[in-house]
Length: 273
Image (tube, rainbow, N blue to C red; front, side, top):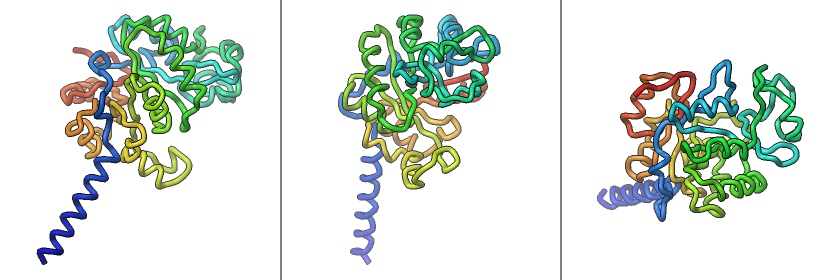
């Protein structure tokens, strides 16, 4: 009996160690996150007048003292634009994908029937100019060298606080390899066949952060509804990764997250206090 119990304890210890290895954040020479903690306006401080990810929405966030979360992807002619969706239907009323149009064609469109256009990353960096921290989501599932490298060439020259994040551990791994000085984060949510096509096994691994060994993120950016999940708590409380919660939409949840020591990505209201 003693031998059986000992073997069970040993097996359990091995499983725990493997689990911790898989989900562990960066522990060696982590990026300095001090200037990056706080509240971020999700795609800017947008409303009906100032559409999401538009320059006026970003400026409004700056004027209110908030950091800014933005999304970047490539146009057809490989220019880096600030836009969330893969396609243009919701924001521009056009049944095309961002990657199917050139920058000039994208600039001819209007956001939500306003006078605002789709900005480039260069335009956003010139506008923000280091006044508030930037949280930059790299869109896509694979490590697109053109997007990652192009963004890095701009960010290398940017004089301000910023960090990058992605749902794709392959993209985060690209920055681990080629820009280890950047603060990098892994976006996490519950991934199902309805939200992502492909292998159920991969979806399970992504949902439970079991791919962190590929990218060793400095912070975990999690769907706010999942902030009490064991893996997230282990990463942030035991293994000392910074924690970000998204997307918070009311003052009550904002205050709860803030008391928990999380940085917060919010939208649809202006936080107080």
